[in-house]
Length: 260
Picture 1 (cartoon, rainbow, N blue to C red):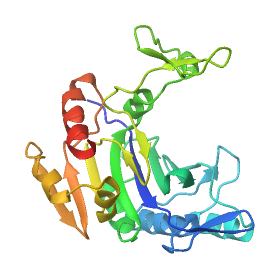
Picture 2 (cartoon, rainbow, N blue to C red):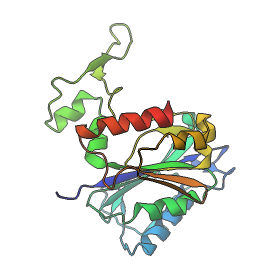
Picture 3 (spheres, helix red, strand yellow):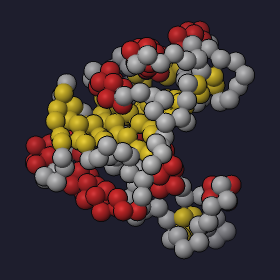
Picture 4 (spheres, rainbow, N blue to C red):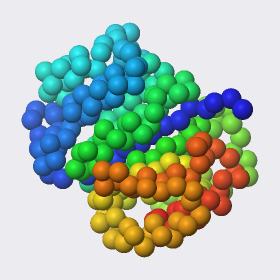
């Protein structure tokens, strides 16, 4: 079987945001996009990955160190996808849900190195909430609700469930109903409801979900491995990302236990 591209999403609590010019900063936790860039640069060096990046397919390439200086000088946030080295890297604020995130998506299998190294470095941030690994293609289509996405990819949506946006005519519109997809991603206040073949949970998420970590983890008696490091619980379901319909049962079971 050919190796597939994977993706990791790492989520952090925002806290109290401050603004300087057009830049947002997370002063309460001493964590922002510039610090994230510096940590990513360190991870890549430790993984032996040397690469330059560009913004949104522009012609100009730069190192991550140069990019951190650039957005600091211009007093702007890192809002654009950085491409390079077989990866797409993105940082984003979702202030209405009290979280920010880092997304690392491989465009070449294995380009990002060891996901454990990514989580290890970011888990030392006291506002770390969670992280999970997913198959890029599977995640895309599990969360695609717009017909245009299917049409652009020449992919059939025949037989998929359809739902209304609930608005009265003429504002009513229809979309693909992904609410029962096992690989769906649901943004919650302070965390994300998502299932991955590998997941990491910081101490903050248990408080956000108002549940007992010990009791919840004891219910995962069908999981091969689960252990803690740096106050973070790692759950390993399988070595590869979920990528097929046969994975539905295990995903539904995990979602019910972790996020019910």
